[in-house]
Image 1: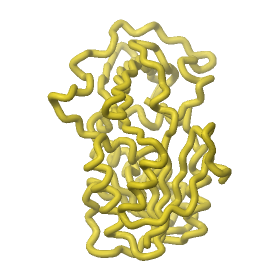
Image 2: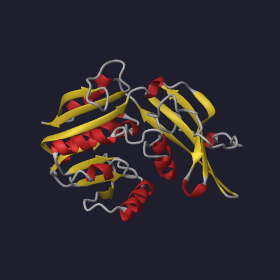
Image 3: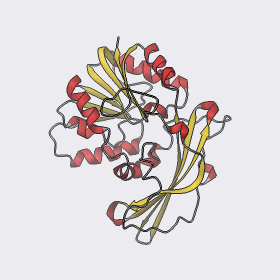
Length: 293
């Protein structure tokens, strides 16, 4: 799932790559629970880890990376990254010369990040820590000059208690003047609902072939957009299918700004793209820049 993949790329096979249509559709047993069961926003990310870099190379790429690198250069270090995943943003930001700590709850995401770390040649290397962003494992006010929440990570917090716990946790480890940068995907609630569409396909690692079948549902009452994912990977005669669901909660911008300020931050700017243009109603990116009081 990639809420920020360009609409022109959605569902288009890579040039020169042909894959058979998948033989199965997403298993209803992997759907997000209804109101009778609680869904934790971290669920699904372990299963996504094997495909995260593959998908983002074709879609998101590095479009947000320069923005965070520039922020790190201006603010200096140390930098704390929430939801660092496989290190897609962590490594380029660390290469600017700042010290970076990346936290993530997913063991499998972090295992990919650490494999990248073992291959990295740069002298300035990020530190990866397994942690829950709702209760950051740092004592007192840490020396972070910048806290980054890239790529909609706060939208994976699927209820208000989790969101507020995270914002307060960030405030607790921030010193006065720390900059808190939040990247949100604005158009997720506008995605149409559909079932069992082939959304991406292409070459994977070591000559494998991968395709993604996706279903999307909207839960308007809970402000959730649910992506049911089925990845199929062929390597020779071996066929592997991975099914999981990811959910994203999107609040209206004024509501989100209010929650950030109630946690102890002053909102200083809201941007509408990675080039620094101011936000307007047409923006498909919400970048909130706040400062710890």
